[in-house]
Image (cartoon, rainbow over all chains, first blue to last red; front, side):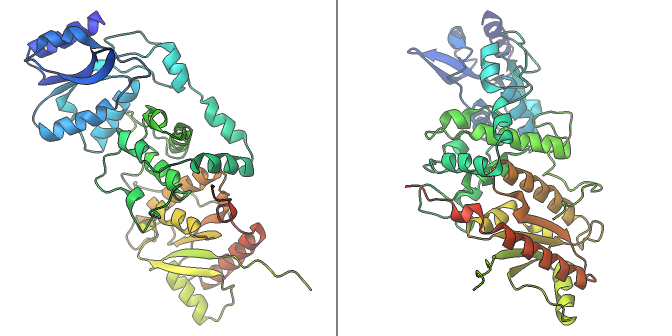
Length: 269
Length: 143
């Protein structure tokens, strides 16, 4: 923690950044907060958010930068947050030149809970690297089910949906101004639970974009296992197009370009 | 009396330049194929979003057939590169969620392939009829 506070203090003092987007402990609650050079004393309360009190900082940063397009901000990132930033750079939503990372490595229990394959960012200012979890047992379990059983399981989950749009609203990667989920020609309006395809439409958008922060699932009042769906989407994108979501080295998302040639074959009937 | 055969409802998204012209050729050649397919003409198979496919299933389609130009023959050069990316991904995602991936099929049919068009429609209709109504259609509604 001291290491992190020291780095933040230096960043603010040197005037390299207009602010640091992190967490503060206020009245016993960990809350997202923008630390500014004008109030350096606040940095003493800067914390690393506990695993069960995370916020979509990437999303807050997008709002900040839309108000202050020329300013540089520092931001606290976990492994997932950094993947999110990388993906947002690729989609043209943020400028990598104007973001400074303050990295936090997740503890082992967090990585196990998330089944996270990359629980630390490229810069670590707090915590130590732990063992990544390379296979998701939750996805494997559904994969092993028969078609009928999988369908029943997913229908049971989808029918609990109350269409609160919480998954979309908290998602750091959902930046569209118009949303397919609200398009009256694509999605029936005025009924709960919504169309069974509601979650699938979102899953399509999340493929190659979801950075597996898990906020959607934690936010869902109906406990729909959204994360399993999106993890599978990313696994498919990896299998089909060899694209690592949130990586800076594997080029653009397969949905962003047509390609020089297509080596894919249609599936037999 | 023999049980009445299930009449499947199939939605076809056909590209204006190849598959739709192929359908035209099948028509003027007077080739017979089942009338279970409802055709929607699109300018390019690459304009068919996975949303449209999912919406078709939601609205009660038992099968969805996407028809486009062969790779390399696209009127817009590379539109069908995106079609195959999207539809292959969607087939796999549907399989994962138990939606029977075989109900979505992608076929390249050129404007010269009238007989192939009739053949594909026959085979696909046969297959969907055998599969019966889609699970999404018969899924119990939540209370």
